[in-house]
Image (cartoon, rainbow, N blue to C red; front, side, top):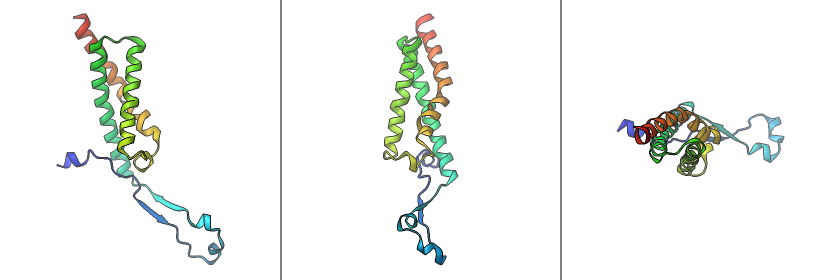
Length: 137
C-alpha cells in the first residue's frame, strides 16, 4: 500500500497565502501589489513527482524500444517513434496534472525533457536488443 501511494503525483505548492502587510507605509501600496500571492513549494513533493515521472518515462522507453526493435525500425524512423512516444506520454502526464503542470513540477520542461533524457539510453538498449533478436538471429 505504501508503494502504491508513492506512485501518485502530489501538488508541489498547495499552500498559497496572501501577503499580510503589517507596516503602516506598506498600507499605501497599490491594490495590485497587495494582492500578490506567496507560493510555498515543498521540495519533498517536487522530488517525489520527479521520481514518479522518471519511472514512467523509463517504462515507456523499455516498451518503445521493444516495439521499435520488433517492428524493425531503423535510423530516423526509430528515433521518430521514440520522440512521438515521449510526446504522447508527456501529454498524458500533463493531462494527469489537470493541464496545470506548474502545480506539480517546477517547469513544463521537467515533465517532458527530463523524462525523455532519462529514458533515451534505455530505449537504445532495448531497441538494439530486440532488433537483433527478431531480425538477425
